[in-house]
Length: 208
Image (cartoon, rainbow, N blue to C red; front, side):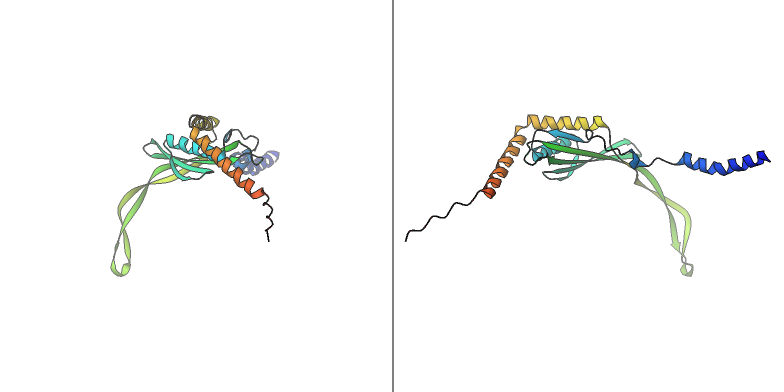
């Protein structure tokens, strides 16, 4: 009797154990928000100059720029690691002046997403009309090849972004025109702020 009861309890516990084993970890639990070193880098340059250096960095590595402003760059690059596999990397860069306002340094935020596409065959069966009976499917079929997205994941390798940040720094260092343009923008912005805060000169009394 005791053995029978133990077997029944074991059978009841098996589905629970199987569910615990097969349960996948929740992805967002791995997001600790404890570091800013992987996707962020600081530069001693204005934000617009940093973004321009980032744009040239991506262009130099074969990325196609799909959108570009003084604060954001979007680019894509395609790879073919296998005959039946296609990979695309979407790269986004955001440039922002550091706080407090008026700081001469800026931060570059980089994020790259890897999309994987596999070649899939889709079978299309042929059909013919048969009068009042409607259409009749025939065993003759044709197959079309199409790329289907099978995976998409943010690249989190620190070395990948470190190489990108180093090349951006090289463009900033070797191309003085980027920094000169940033300095001119700073001068114009400072002059505009000075004009806004300047008090109007007192009106001169008119002689009778």
